[in-house]
Length: 302
Image (cartoon, rainbow, N blue to C red; front, side):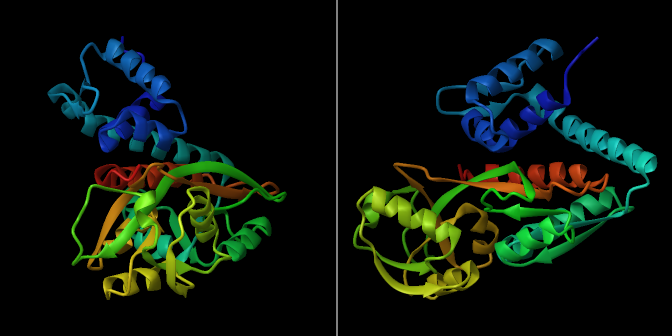
């Protein structure tokens, strides 16, 4: 009898999507050694290797590839079954409301919701796009079930690790593509920035100051969409969070990983301390994490 856990299968899916134990472990908020042990235990239980591993490369074996589709379908079926049983037991609402910043709401959530609702037509995901302060207020008041974003701790909400992104450099598509760019190379470079009050810009400014890098800020904008549009038009480069990759694909820009160091951006899910979540909310959260991991892993953003 094979005895493995849903957590092991989810770890297997993340390593397969990222093709990296380090990046998958970051996304799961566990250590690479812990994830490696989890996969080794799973391999011992199923009786075959899932990955070919070297110091620089991780790839699915043929047996691992055969298992991947079944594992993904099994986890979705498990999440769906648990949610349906809980809904029946608790008579929960069939509407789940989710708040996210505009860039996430317009470029990531729509397709993720479509995928989820193809499997769960009985649930309706109501999406709210707004700024972080408004989302926080609506979650605290119970008008939104959950919010996803770059939130600081607050007394009225529980803050749960959701996904780890990182900072990247966006340049016009006419520039030469590179695998990575160092922070040191940005010294004196003209940059398009966000408002100083933006949480993302505060993180960027903190890293620039720490590295003693003095860029030339040519323009300042309120939104990442405007920032990317100006990069596309050739007005300069911009440091953006990697959750902007889907938006960048719709524009003629080159996105490159910033290294030395890699600067993480931890997204959290927030939920009200005073309100109970609808029964389907956790299943949608798990689906959304898996959806992001698939494109983030292929892009190698961490």
